[in-house]
Length: 209
Image (cartoon, rainbow, N blue to C red; front, side, top):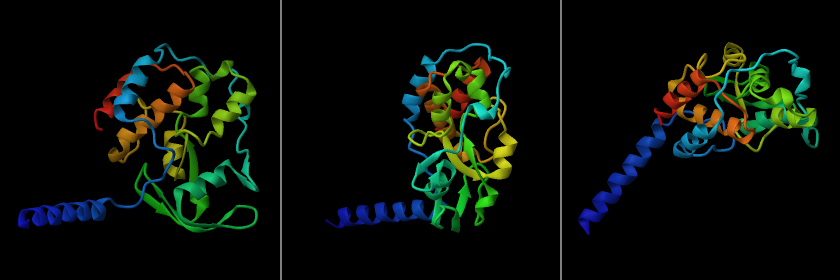
């Protein structure tokens, strides 16, 4: 009996230690498939030379669209990924804080926060979206049901630009695993192709899981 109590106390202490060391709560797009499932999905994607940006325009991916009431996609992500977020009648945040997992920074002004498309719009265009309908591109740019959108610091989002994981990865190495899983889930969902260097980078990031 004493041994059981000791074991329970030890387990509780370990849990508490993990909780205390976990740091700020992560932004929360929908949870992607596990690393093993992501690896299987990655293996199924078509590897080919990337297309060009000829004809590309952000206007061909209409965003941000109204999602609910007066809230558009950006505002819904700000509410979802923030802590203590309050909004006014037009759904503009009036209070709250946002932790950017890309670079471990926290903001209390929503104007300092960007909504990143995990798979950038131009990247999608070069990987197959150029042949989609406008309606499908709009869905892609505003999809809240998969891990395509996340609130991060404006500086990290602009540093990333349209680059894939072979060219850019979050400076916070602790999120490389889930970032790869996010990216793969999006590409798998939309059957987008990828380059060989991109695939290699994603495999390496999954190796950190």
